[in-house]
Amino acid sequence: MSEPTPAGEPAVREKSPVNPAVEASKNFGITPEQYMLPASSEIRLLNPDGSAVPESEQGQEPGHEYPMPENSRLLDAYEKLVVGRRINDQNMALVRQGRMAVYPSSHGQEACQVAAALCLEDDDWLFPTYRDSVAVMSRGVDPLEVMSTYRGDWHGGYNPRKYKVSVQATPLTTQLLHAVGVAHAAKLRGEDTVALAMCGDGATSEGDFHEALNFAAVFQLPVLFLVQNNGYAISVPLSSQTRAPSLAHKGVGYGMASERVDGNDLAALLSVLGRGIELCRQGGGPLLVEAMTYRMQAHTNADDDTRYRERDEVAEWMAKDPITRMQHYLTGQGALDDAASERISEHAEAMAKRLREAMAHKPELDPQDLFRFVYHEPTPQLREQAEQLADELSREEA
Image 1 (cartoon, one colour):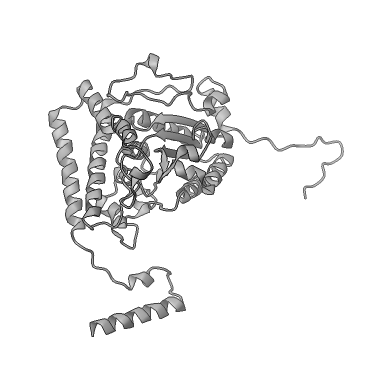
Image 2 (cartoon, helix red, strand yellow; image 1 turned 90 degrees about the horizontal axis):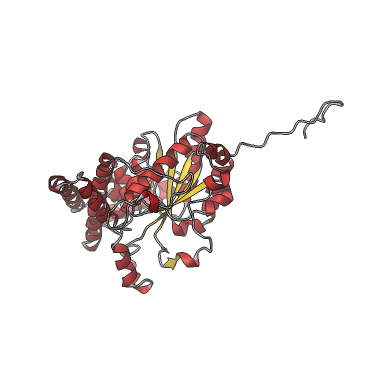
């Protein structure tokens, strides 16, 4: 209980916390409402045919203007797009061959993932989902390490601390809470670190989504939440999940700025996410970005997507392919010629071949690893189970 105010002295009230939206809006000469609300139409810099959207037609509003990235940056990102697509398709083949247990393809969503990885600095953290393998690879993780999980290996495949990439989360939305925790710790330590947390549209229906966004907003943490809205939570369409005008509008209720971007437009993604990351770094976060994209293949190899969506819908989105869009733009700019295209294709094929050959060899497994790495000091129950397994294995060998 607080001490009573001495007689004759005015009561002192605690100051209201500074709203980062108010402070950030001052930098753009707009109102906090304009800063927090997403633009009335999704941000797009490139048309599906690869032509640049004229500034007069971009529909950009005060506080939502975004520049076109440099061609050199786009070319680097395009190469990662091509490699990511080739690995995606190679993995689907490996599943059919029995070399991998399961694979959730991100064919069609690669632009979101490449941009997310490229907008981060070395000390920033990425928190991906099970479908974000291309983002993990674009962050520098070897594809062989990334894909070991889908083969059924017992470990995550790579060292999260080395790459500043969390293990790919299969439970929906748990990674958002982890991202908030890392961002909170970084803020308490005074570190210049931003966390980028990825999720899908289905994850926005989870309780962890609410908890993560609310905590991040209350404590003004440097987190960018990237929602890849691909239209379906497995077979559940977005219309059965929310009645909000957009998923981007959900951020406003938590007191954070939001934006809605064409998720198949790599140029727009780099610009929107790049600015968002810097705003978080400067104290203007957290932020929520909704990227409108599409999963062109089934949820996983165990899914039959013909049961819940029409082929005409898939064909419509195939015409918006992020790779074709960027290829046409860079070719028109003179930044991508035949020699560069061939070099990029050869690089992608070499990566796929290396992965294919590695997956053809089954790893040597020690069943005792089931118990060896659970606790630093094994419990009596684990020791008993390990002994039982050792006895069974010895009798099989006899």
